[in-house]
Image (cartoon, rainbow, N blue to C red; front, side):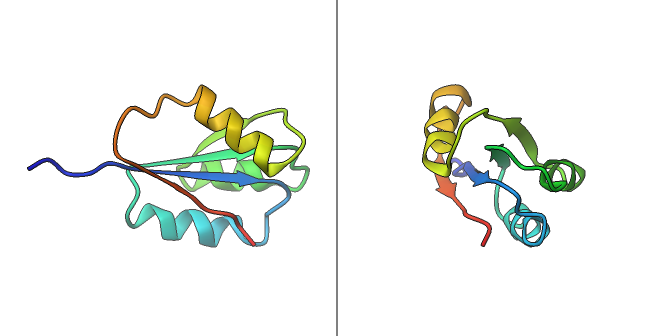
Length: 87
């Protein structure tokens, strides 16, 4: 039996106060963490990258559009996808 792959997608904007906690927790179980940003101006992207997440600037205007962008542009081929929102 093969191991299930888990991809975590985190649509975010200006989540500097919580992105460290969210990414750090996801690192415990995810094979891939993708932070899909839609306009942060507070260091969220740099912090997520420092923690080892893949970071994408989607150029979108809200979380729903950033999530649609992720499904269309990230090469997710198998396993589970979990969407987390840093709050």
